[in-house]
Length: 384
Ligand SMILES: NC(=O)c1ccc[n+]([C@@H]2O[C@H](COP(=O)([O-])OP(=O)(O)OC[C@H]3O[C@@H](n4cnc5c(N)ncnc54)[C@H](O)[C@@H]3O)[C@@H](O)[C@H]2O)c1
View 1 (tube, rainbow, N blue to C red):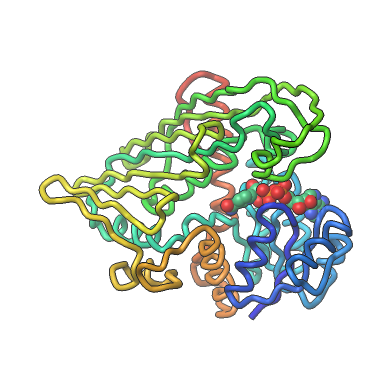
View 2: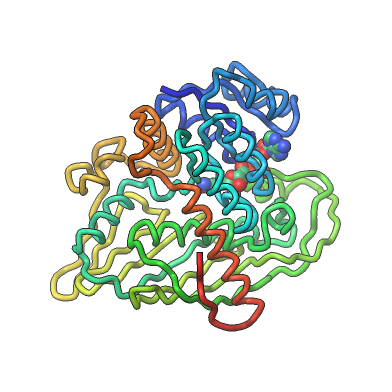
């Protein structure tokens, strides 16, 4: 099995470390924004090496793969350097800041066919998502007529909530759509294969001025830190808190997505409803071990995550028997297991069973078309 190193010690870097270990991949060390940050994280996670720099990671010949859990603006340079250094790469989403950057990474990955390059669209790796995909692909729900749903959070509800994602130069021109809407669009494409041909968007900056704390706040930690007295500077916000997008897919199907990072009480909820000519599938990430199947002429069903009740695809990524809930961290484990099994098999001509740089590029294209629709106030075509 390969040996990995992780860059990023914030919210999601440690999730990578834990999931890698649970997937049977050894983690050699971790890199933060400074040697001290690397050391703190290495100690907390029981890792042997606290890297002093990214160059040290890439020079480490014992490292086969690099996981990038750093802010979005660093993904292009770090993924490029990793591929050029001969490492496999798992890059957090979004793959990069613009479609020009993601296209560059797709070309580079194609020039390194013996290296695996994935984007961490982890939500695909809930067992019932693979099961839903098998149901749709085998024609069980009939022709897909429409999809709807979204991704809703509350961690940026107050004007005192702050994160680097709020700044376009750090996170990209789209925020709620880029950060979480891309998970929804990727998931719908993964399950149904639908390709958007046209879209129209309405984006809203609901909190136009935010208070930027003079001291940095960790991702998702703002809510816990409100009690402390903090000094702020006012900042005019240029990225959306809310977005609604309508899609016309190539098949004639229609779609509607809403995203929000300012909806009190919705902690982190992705949901979808995929309506077919025979049945409908509905799922949400707050109850990830249940898939609702709706019928018109007989009672509706709820499928529990249980290997004995799921398709081969769902069964393959279920880690525990029915009744034993699986969640967010398990999706990372299953994606990584899929990625490293592919590498271990050594056949790089085989179809890639994980989200690829092409998938990351497709999301960047969609984001830019959404922004164009918002700026021009009209339906736009989607080309990749
Ligand atoms: N797939 C998911 O579910 C998911 C969830 C959260 C975040 N993400 C993605 O993961 C990435 C990181 O997000 P986060 O929420 O963990 O952010 P974060 O701010 O909590 O952590 C970012 C980390 O990167 C480190 N860093 C900054 N500059 C660095 C550098 N030059 N070299 C090495 N490390 C550096 C920071 O010190 C920090 O440890 C983002 O791209 C985000 O979109 C994905």
